[in-house]
Every structure is written in structure tokens, then in C-alpha cells.
Length: 222
Image 1 (cartoon, rainbow, N blue to C red):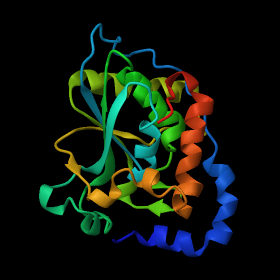
Image 2: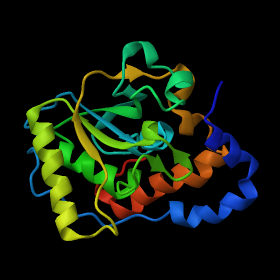
Image 3: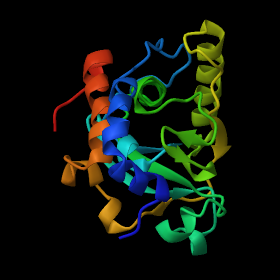
Image 4: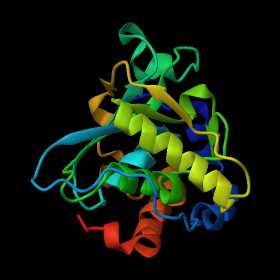
């Protein structure tokens, strides 16, 4: 198994980084999206692909969101031949560590998923980094699959920026989804399988706790 240098250093510098746990636990009150898709009248299956730093944390959060039926870690933004952890970690493939969220649109809307993404899953104002993870492969991005997703994402970013609920403008890029490539098996459900790993304890478990606290109507225990 290979890990990025920042994550390896984090484990060795655990005594120093414990002070960061309070910052990791911070969440922001984000307004509901004004423009959103209505809840479907019947069960169905739709997908959303998003990126916001290490995919372990994004995956961990969305596994606890109402209406979500599956979350897969992977890579988006680059070519198929470079969609592997060793190459993506070099930061030169064009890929971002991403997650594919499969959900029932009769239970949760695309805009509601984006609310979770902006409010607790990551810091959307950071450019090409999240916490200790630095590089374009840790960028914040929404990979839209159709015009409706693009319209909702762009309108929501404009709404949040106008409301000035964040200290800085949103850095999230809204780009067309060309492909999503599943990550290696050891990355799937990583937080669930390694709840005591220092990186998970400091940076990811607080996000799940914030989902439950900040947006309880969308939180489910799994």
C-alpha cells in the first residue's frame, strides 16, 4: 500500500497535529439551495461525482447521508492509463481524488447532496488542497453529468458566495464529467475499516459528526 507523503508525515507528527482536531471539527451553516431538482415521485438511481481532498473523508460523510445507496472512491479529470494511486499522488495526471455517490432522487435531491458537500464534507474555499493534503489532485470540484447538475451547482455556488457565509469565495470548479475510474480496493470504505487510523480520527470522523450535528435531517446511522 502506498500513501501520499503528507499522510505519512501526519502519522509521525501525531502529537503536533492533534491540535488541528478542533479545526477539523468546524462546520459552516450553509443555506439550502434556491435552485434544485424536485424530489422524484418514484424510487430511482442517479449519481453525482464530486472531489474535495482525500476521498476517504468525502466517502465517509456521504455513506451517512439519507437516500445515498452507494459511495465509491476513485479518480476523475484525467486519462484511464493514469487512474491509479501511485500516479495520481504525483499530482501531474489531471485527476482529482473523487467519489461517485449513487442515490435515490425520491429521498434526497442533487442540491441537498451539494449542501452536505459544501457544509461539512470539505472546505470549498481552499484551492488545490485540503488540510495537510496539497496538490491539484486534492482540488475541490463538481463533475456534472448533465445540464441540470451543472445549472444547480453553478447557481448554488453563486448563492453561497452572495450570502457571504464563508470567509472566502468558493474555489470549487464545476466541470463536465468525462469519466470516473474506481480506486484500488484498499481505498474503498477506508474510514469504516480503519476508524482508529490517526488521519481518519483527526480529519474525517469529525466531518461525519458535523453532518449529524449540522444537517440532522439528512443524517442516517450506518
